[in-house]
Image (cartoon, rainbow, N blue to C red):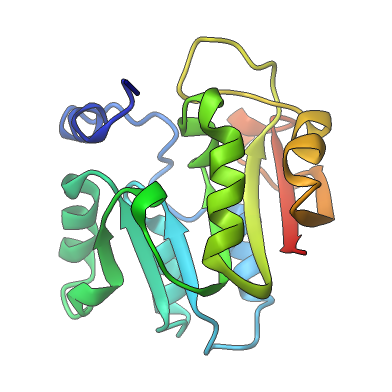
Amino acid sequence: MNKFNKDYWEDRYQTDSAPWDIGEVTPPIKDYIDQLTDKSLKILVPGAGNGHEFEYLIEQGFTNSYVLDIAPSPLENIKKRLPELSEEHLLLDDFFEHSGAYDLIIEQTFFCALSPDLRNKYVEKMHSLLKPGGKIAGLMFQFPLTEDGPPFGGSAEEYTKTFGELFTIKKMETAHNSIERRQGKELFVIFEKK
């Protein structure tokens, strides 16, 4: 049984044990969102925690955006910050049970929070949730994969192998605008569904 279940994550948020949450949208993802022009894109932010990327999308007029988390507390935090937002945008669900069809999925500390033995299942699920030509865009950690986590690390070589069969690697490079404590530890990625 996966110990990183709903109760595990709810406890992390109840006890404010989410050190990866910087309290705002991360600069690499903000810059990516800022260059998007099609406000009608259907966007999912899975495993989003307190959802700063989702909140930024909504503020920028991407009203067809949805945030998904397995734990209720993060979604309640988002609702407090965005009280006018329709609850249909806040999805309390297990990512692996979720169904939908999205143009874009924003990856922000979700992949690295999953047990590494779920990585292939994650890739298959992402592929099934994206429309033809849909993309995953966001950040993956680049530091050695250990059993200590979350977050769990990884490398460009591993991600190329893990995603390469179902996705075209459009971009994978060390993020140039990470926050100071993550300098050199984040890869900005864009993976397009084959």
